[in-house]
Length: 328
Image 1 (cartoon, one colour):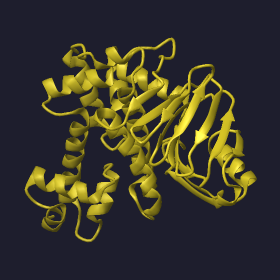
Image 2: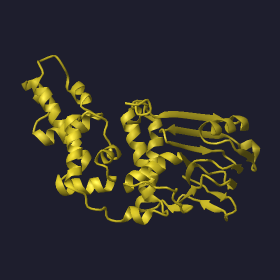
Image 3: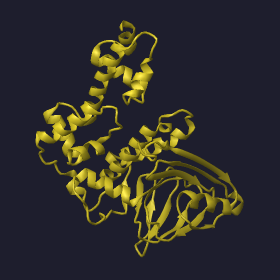
């Protein structure tokens, strides 16, 4: 497992009335920027919370007064949508677009950004996304190289469909800041959420490759399914996710999922969990009394959430893992 894979999410919180401290905090997680108070200076008070997921940095920030700001070419993709209030964003020489509670804006990494309107009640979710990570995820979904970055539309609807789901998932990651032993403290969950947000953004936004993503996946030979099954049977405890399994099969994520449904009757990750459950049962049955615990065996075979593991185990074998261990 790499250092990146073994890292949990990082959480940071800032509360300050200093404009310089605010600039420094934003620069530490996002970009160097010009920041100007245009409303009542006495009302200026920064509240900022940030979660680092690796390829994505998500945060909320508010200032309590009217603001103006801008920064050069960010070099990252960026999405912003207010939980309250509104802000206007001008990218390069394009006309200003308004971010509202119903509409997220998508920033181009190669354009200068200028924000002339930021209302006192504006509290946006701001998400910085590494370009290479989003491009790699797009290639994994398509199952082919993408020689040029796609062209994204500057905004998308977050009141319905995939846009609403994606915005809710992004907000959930920020709520985990208050959970001392939450799921995002586990590297495996952090890594999976990072991947899901990258994939979800590609499906929630409209861009030059959206039609190809929306098209039915091509048929795949069962040999590719067998390749994945053989690897999982040989090394079931590895930290698999949809992208890694598709890489093993040498096809796209959607193609692999469709092929597994057709030839195996379940999704690829459901197959991984089924193999792991079987290995857990074998080990529990073979364990001498007092030599191990259910949680130790579950973690050994890649189950990070014990409650979910126990429910799956009972549904699969008709008894709890503890009953299997006691019977041994």
